[in-house]
Length: 335
Image 1 (tube, rainbow, N blue to C red):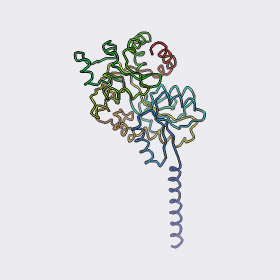
Image 2: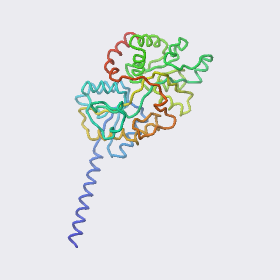
Image 3: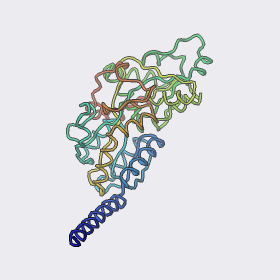
Image 4: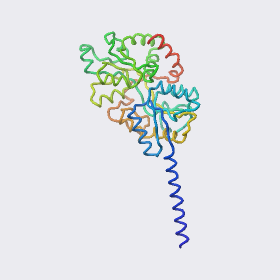
């Protein structure tokens, strides 16, 4: 009997130490993230991840252009383990430059094909769709007799000169998606004609993809090109803004990827799994009105489901292949 008790105590201590060891291993793990998504969402998601795993997270929040350039520059000895956010064309670009690690998360199994790369180097976690944001109060004051724009072509009305804000495509994935939207819906030549006609009407080309929604929300501009979810977030906070979803818009996914030479591979994989989970995607939707990619996750009330959007067959590979050429032409001929 004494021997049995001694054996049970010994086993109990072994399992107890093993459990402590695993917990300590998690606590000792760390993760460094480059984040393109908003500060509020980044903070909430990383905090929840740390609470669930014990893994300590540090992040740098910056624009798409800055962080993509950092990943390329640091690819042999990265300072970050994960790139969080950014449209798929940017992750494709990084993959072609051999900067990403292939990882097939078990949570990606039931995701739609458009949200997964063929070589498992990036995975989408929310749907992005472009729209026209309108500050209804300023618009009524500036254009009392003019109907609201309902199409991308309506934005080229000369009366709108100085009242439109669009992000700089040299720095922002949001603006590059807009540029590709026009090139792919109209064709190369007509697409550039459209962009050259629109650019002189734009009052500001800020670098941050979140800027247009903020600037129309604050009433500094009447119109802005932004992601629909960003506009709806400001509307929910009481700003006089509405989101218009033009026909023939481009849709993409916000993606996550792991740096090829990451020093914290296990923690990075766990964070990818976390971002693809129902809990993480519903948390992000509750903060930012995004549409989850995970079919089991529900978008917050007020987010716009895909069924209500008229999207072109957006070619992400074409957008990635043309990126250098398009941005070079933009800087030389448009702005």
